[in-house]
Length: 143
Image (cartoon, rainbow, N blue to C red; front, side):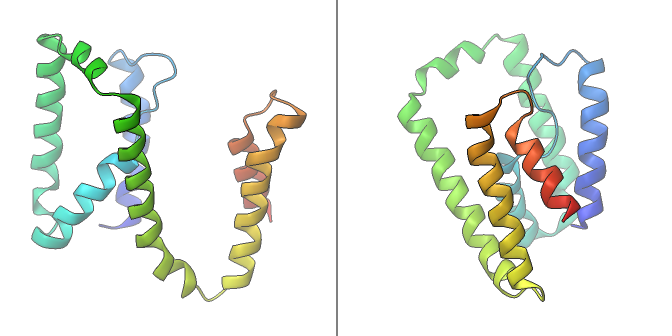
């Protein structure tokens, strides 16, 4: 899938979700939890099933809302959730390492990533007026 498809999908989600009643603090857009299984689907079957998967997931979300099944998420322990998210993070890291190490500008990419990570980690110790991830991204982008 072309990267612009993902970018425009996030723009459309970010614009329409608040209009449809999104809650404050909820991020609407591409999510890693969707990318990994969707990437495996696209690799095996191509892009023709993406709209069907998105529609099916929307139907499931609507059914969960109508049947008030969100309360069942309390059954999932924090340990299970943490394990799932850590495993997902490792899968994403493993998928990006070959791309990252073959980058034509490998050393500058490592330097920018290190600066961004350091800002994200240490800025909250100085101030919380600016979100550290936003500051890291902004400074890394200007480099």
